[in-house]
Image (cartoon, rainbow, N blue to C red):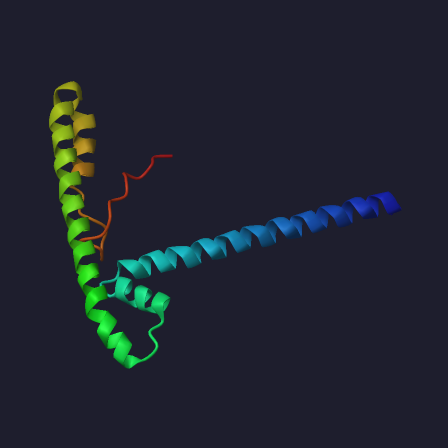
Length: 135
């Protein structure tokens, strides 16, 4: 094996290892972020995360801050619930407006999408996912 070939093989192996490590790191960071977002969707997730951010000095301060944070969490849930209702109403209006222009199959797909419930475990949570893509 010539020195040049050895250099190319070593360079290629280094590149391959770097690509694999980079992909693993990106995946791990994505999972970490997704887990944190999912934690915020839990009923007490907002309260827990805000308290973790503030890091109350002692139990007295924690007890003083908790009702204020819980009040904001409740208000956030109400805002998100209202938002979801408004989005559903807008989507229902869109279905009604598009109905005369769609064939039966298109209309059925659109209605199935519009009638889907919010994501499981998150009845008041933000938004909804779109329909699955066909490949």
